[in-house]
Image 1 (cartoon, helix red, strand yellow):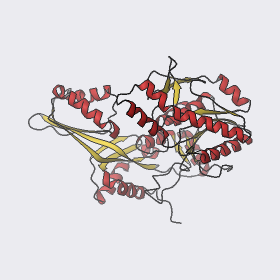
Image 2 (cartoon, one colour):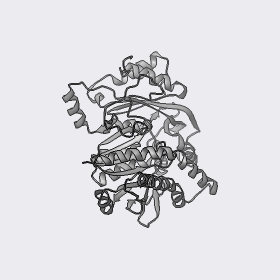
Image 3 (cartoon, one colour):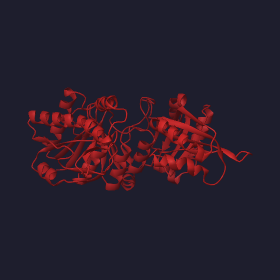
Image 4 (cartoon, one colour):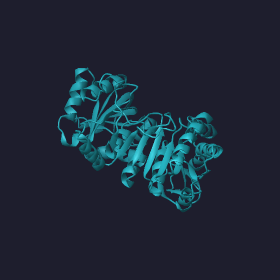
Length: 421
């Protein structure tokens, strides 16, 4: 018998037919003798609808009341799933975030989980009752509802799995695992059996939509084994052919057991939700760049790629960097408010860009990964606007219109294409 946390996303909960499919899947796991907790998202599109209501009510809405509104989507699906399970003969009950409770810090709309009180939850699970928990929400010290930010149900599931010391956290999505790249772009993309936490963290942070970045970081910190599965497969399927997210040591042990070599590159990710900002004629003196990025950091705007051009003869330089597309307007506002302090000439935004990244733990011990990327793109006439790297990732900024071509070119260049059937 194992203790398993099952998480179902919005597409899995989009209507009663799909909720019944989820319930059948949960029932099958329960009938195998496992203790089960289920974490659910709101129905697909529901959170967007609720956010729209908040914006209609007030352009400068109160974040505390925003959380009250948007957290209701998960409350609906948790109640409906518990009802459906009971109708199928499975003992179940819903637990709202404040009932456990899931305690968070004091940051509405982007709270972080501090701890989860599991005494009553564990007692209920041991008695054979399926716990159905709404993802995305928690409770602050003052008793107010908080939410974890978009995609926060993944983080809820991993946090619950860590708190109850689950054997595994199964994340059910609309795909059947993690692929070497988006199969909608590259038909010969391959599904991966194992991916390390580090690789998944990088893939999630550079555009892969399978898992929320924070959830992967939490799984790595807490040592939670995560499995990515499709919620549209046969609910009674015993063999789970998904992708396991594991430690690097577990991956090495598996490769040694199967006598396989590690793939140099694990996957190619892309992100079109990027914006490029160029600040022109910045004084070329110590501290000038700090005056740009300090206020952006204070406004919680994440800056990724940064290029400072060679200083001009007049003691000036241009600084180019990228921010998430959703933060562009705020970033421009922050920069304009600091124009006198920074001393720049003007700010040039560009939203027609995309970030393409190659990720793989194997590049720690292999040279030439970046040069292969640059040469492959150059051979197809794709111009690189900016570059950033980490120990297991190389990212480039390119024209948005060339994104799909770049992904296909790189997927082939690194030998990731599946064999032709």
